[in-house]
Image (cartoon, rainbow, N blue to C red):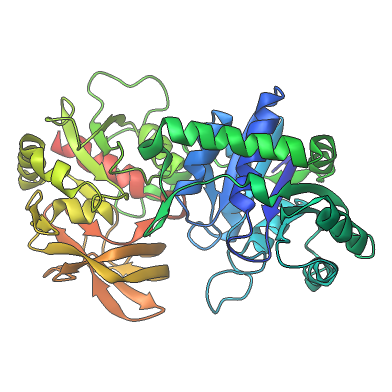
Length: 471
């Protein structure tokens, strides 16, 4: 164990929609513009907000999910991401005390704040209240004495008079006001069926949005007070997460590494190439996945299924994560050369891992448009949102894990596949409902379930071992 002193803040809110993404992203950029090295983090499984965080700071946005990775890994993962930084800003999820359904505080912003011993700044939507704001803040600050609500940022403030009334009321709460952001200056960040539009799809507009958010925070918030609050966080004692040892230690009991020796140095010429889908249609990924693949000895090469007509040279395994293929179905379908290459690679038995968007891409069709045809299923948009944490067990041996391996993951989609599971399903869900889902065939593992590999020791090493054996 090592004791490390990293200045840090958690930006939370009483409920979703209060403005914590605007404040957190703007604060990250404002600190970065002041010359600080800022480490960006997001509580929960969200993929989109970390993209904006990365744009604001120039560093990978990282998730801290106590459900998928386990509470014991939150501080180590945080220390890994924040190493060498001047300050860390952690954006919360939903309301401060909202966590995994039916499991108390698990995976809530409050839970992560306690694990990090970090002060919390509460972003309050003050648009329809004045003196009542004090009761709201008092309630959140006193609910759990282990959670240190150390400041308030008032959002959607209507006028100077409104701000004065709010500040006067909050003098009785004992929680200092560290900022007031005006309603008229709210930044428009376009959304659609699964939330904000990802950074990769917005380019110039995303940059402008982040700059505007930073301007809001600089104008309305006391940056020096916020930085001083971050420095008030006590030292954190934990062992820093290390991709070169974490997954590899547990890889052997979960099926071994197939004789392939992991490497942490420069990739040798014969390193297996793991091609990872990227570009506007496939934007969902955790930074630790690439780090784990590289630590296990792979050469990781991104490719864009929208524009690249061929897989990277020497591709021995394929990872197709989440994203929005439903938005780009005509363009993905039109790239027939790549679709045929993906199908041909899968037919050789090479490891092919597909999560959610990848599942749709491997199907026969998506909203009537031909896809890769690797899976005996057709996908379409539906009017129903499927959302939530899942506990699952691997039904059959596959490139990620042997049969019987238990994982915790997350579902988030408005599409369905027909059928929903193959003859050999990928997962059997055990909580909150029992059902089978996904497909395992040859080297293909395709499912709606998103899994954070930092919480699934051995997955990356097993995948790279399979790639090495195939190559």
